[in-house]
Length: 172
Image 1 (cartoon, rainbow, N blue to C red):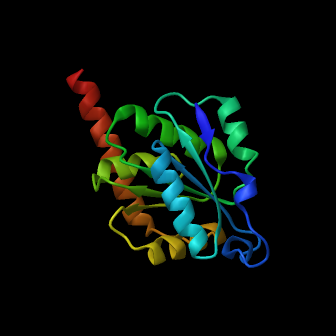
Image 2 (cartoon, rainbow, N blue to C red):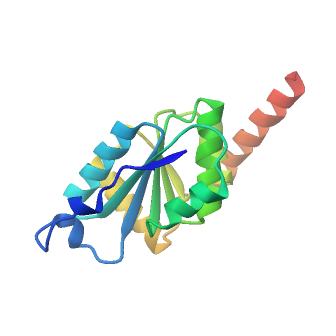
């Protein structure tokens, strides 16, 4: 289930930093409402128009994706630990369903899990240890379509994911 964390009444007038970057609208998606709210607020403090939503781990339906599309994002920021299978599945479903430039901010540095979201169409994955300035720069680059990973590095991460899936399947 998706729950918007954004109240349109929170958007201020012309002095609101969120109003100073026309055209860019970041959808911050997390399975933890507080994280979504905090990241959305931080991005707004940097002049980005950001809206937030939470998603419960597990299957994501077409109706849920449609509600996210109504927020009219131009770029997606997924904040997730990725280590729980249901959270990874939800993140992958949203990335695949929205077809937006996507940055994943992950609390894990497991290359196989990073490969999973890259295989689903994410533009790049960042460790949660990066600075807010780095997140803003990468979101801006992702929205512009700038390649964010060297092709060989992207392939290596995706292959790490595929090996992990094969191993899991072999072990039954």
